[in-house]
Length: 128
Image 1 (tube, rainbow, N blue to C red):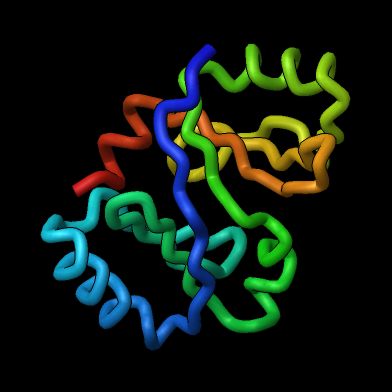
Image 2 (cartoon, rainbow, N blue to C red):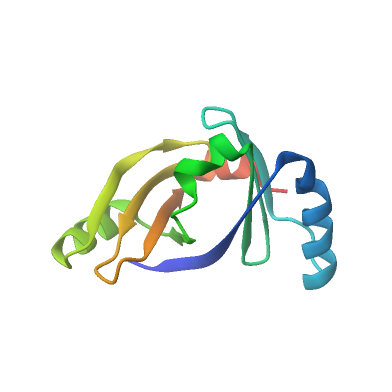
């Protein structure tokens, strides 16, 4: 059971995604690692460094705004078991997403986090 990466989330309007990607690429001196459409939620998502950019209309972003970070983990099921035993509140059970599986959790301190386990085949399709 290991957290592989922690990303801060930045929410923005769709027309700002390309310029925001460019800003962070220059700031971190690296190209984006991931970019894909999450059409079921009406979102475009990209990752540069430890920043997860989430673009969509105000209406489409609203359900996601309480989540402040994304934890990429090696085994979602192990984290689910641990978090339940540790007093965390599971806000959404594990489900399939474009890059693998995810769930949303409220930690005992109130922090809301998305946990994601990438599927090798799906992650490869969306990573740059």
